[in-house]
Structure formats: C-alpha cells, structure tokens
Length: 140
Image (cartoon, rainbow, N blue to C red; front, side):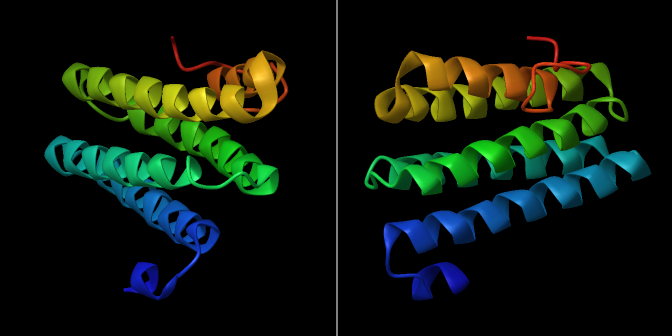
C-alpha cells in the first residue's frame, strides 16, 4: 500500500528497498527455524522486488538514490550469507543464483551511471559483504 502512495520513482525505490529487506529478514527467521521451503519462497519474492526496483532505477538519474541502493544491496548480501549457513544445499544454490542476479542488476545500473570504476568498487563490497574489499565473500 505504501508503494501506491509513493509518486516519484525515488520514493518508490525507497519503498521497494524496505519491502526487499523485510523479505530477507523473514527468510532469515525461517532459515533459523529450518523451513527451507519458506526461505526459498521469500528469496524469490526478494528477487522480484529487486527487479521492480531495478526497473525504476533506470528511470532516475539521481546518483544518491543509486548509492543508497548499492549500500543496502551490500548489507543484504551479508544477510544472504547468514541464510546460506542455515539451509540445505539446494537452498544455498538458489540463494547464490539470486545473489548473482541482484548484484548483476545493480552493477549494470552502476556502470550506466558511474562507469566501470564505480562498478568495481560495488562488486568488491558485494562480494565481501563489507563495501571495503575484505571479508568472507559469497562464493562467486
């Protein structure tokens, strides 16, 4: 409902970010309870929300909006790493695929706006879950 009252692309992007993060928090809760089926459904829903957000990102040229999405996406990679430690192998592979898709969507937009240097910085942060090029990594 909040999405429908957000009129600008920037506001809709922010609302979708909240929705995406809620899906991940719920997926993490289900992962801790061992409910792989619910985790997979929420991870797919997260991907759908991020795809909608990416479509809106193409309609805005505001770098600060993209920067916020980059930062939150890196944080979301950390959550997905935690989820992967608590689910079965099939679920892990699905999470990895979603991670790749989401990161690739954001990278494409970063390249469009900031060039390849900005994309390299984002990829290091997303891969390591830190934004600074250090950490455990997500395995891709």
